[in-house]
Structures are given as structure tokens and as C-alpha cells.
Amino acid sequence: MLDRFAMATRWLARVLMFIGGAGIVVMTAIIGWQVFGRYVLNASPAWTEQAALVLMVWFVMFGAAAGVHEGFHIRIGVFVEALPLRIRTACRALALLIIAACGVALAVWGTELVMAVWSHVNPTLGIPRGFAYLPLPVSGGLITLFAVERLAELAAGRERGRMEGRV
Image (cartoon, rainbow, N blue to C red):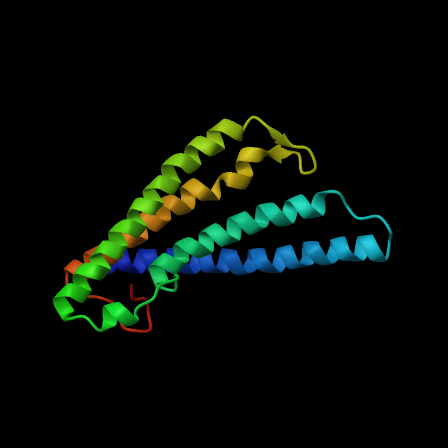
């Protein structure tokens, strides 16, 4: 069962990384259009800056969730690696519990934020402001899911390899 779940989350993390990569490409094109408009046409489109910011929130938050799955989030492992195995495992479990708690907080308060500003419209894009913050609760839920998966792997003694996602 853990193997099927791991396959599904691995696929989901890859989708998130693809969305993040596509977001960077689209944001780069939008910023390129803004620069072209400003310096060549002397008329910068009004929507480009807001669109780039919305895209950035989306791909950064999805990248953060994928980072929890893949283990490429920020950490300092030198101290933990020097500890005995049992203590090292406890430290990794504690770190994953903290990450999961942060994911829950992001999901709960991100949902409140989205609901609070959904009725406000971004004038340059014509979309609800809540749309820009929608990745917060979504990625919070995914961060929690991925951290719990990593905890289950740790508990089952199936921790991932050194280069593929350690905590």
C-alpha cells in the first residue's frame, strides 16, 4: 500500500515541478514582453507585472511542496548526520512533524486568506484576488501530505537515499 501511495505522490511531485518550470517560462515571457513594451514601444502593458506576481506565487508554492517530497528544502544536516542512528532518526522525525505542522498552518490560514479576499477583484487582471493566494492552502495540504508520507517511510525503515530527499 505504501508503494502505491509513494508512486502517486512521486507522480504528483513531478507534476508540481513541471507546473513550476512552466510557470517560470511563462513569467519570463511576460517580463520580456513588459520590457519590450516599456523600452521599444514606450507603452508597458498594465497587466504584466500583476500576472508575473500571481504566477510567481503559484510556482514558488508548488515548488515548495515538491521540495518537501523530494527533500530539496533548506536544511543543515551536518550536525544530524554526526549523531547515532537512533537519535538521527528521531531528529528527522521531529523535522518532518514540524514541516507537517507548517503545512497544516498554511492550509488553514491560507484558506482563510483566500476566502477573505476572493470577492476583491484585481483590476489589471480582472480575476479575484483570492486566485493569487489559492496555492497557499493547496500547497499547505500537499506539504502536509508529503511530510506524512516521509514520516511513514521513516517509521517503516524505508527512508529514501542520501541524495534523494533526506531531512
